[in-house]
Image 1: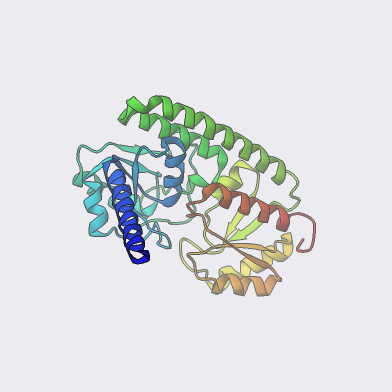
Image 2: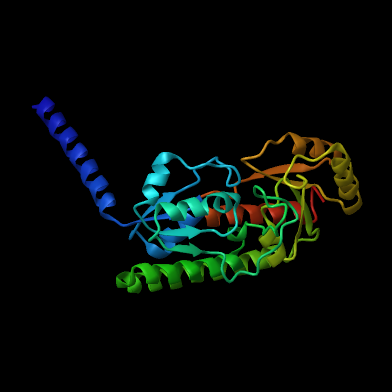
Length: 295
């Protein structure tokens, strides 16, 4: 009797798993470039779509090449949501569009006051203006991105417009609250400068009156001469905070930290749990840029 019960339980579990997979397969598919976009899309679209993410966790948006499976999924996608200016998109968007010529492509950075990059984020951009791509790391820019997502969803599936507008308005309230909290928190910061290995916080720094100073130089590891310049600057301006992305080698940051008695803080700008990551970054800025142990 016990054996029969176990067999029945196993069959039910397998059946439920198959049914769940079938339910997912029945949903229309859309594609995004990076994990933070998946988070944003789910907030506004709810569970209306399956979401194909082109750049997996741990991979670089500057150098990643998509798998055959990802390219196959593109042929079934109802839409592609670009984040705007990452290296992956500059290299691959023509190919992506050619795979599915009927697939609309939405640029989520449209309407944001973009910043020219002092550092090369992409391939073969020596003869053109390079835009800093990290628009998703400031709540002020996220409001524009969310509006773009909402508009795109209405365009491709107007039948669910009531759900989309409700989710969009709810999420906008969350972003307004986050914007207010970050503004208040960072207004208390006394030292407005910090080091960062790769300049991922450009829009956050711009929108909240901070100054990030990159350690990498023109997209490459810093030379000994440039590191010496950073050490002199750190001692002059009392800069002791160094952010580094989880995807980057920590050794150059360690060299600088040892010379200035600084603190290294790891962050993940590509975290799918985007708003919690932004609050973590804000908390670390407040703790380490305010008058206290490190300053």
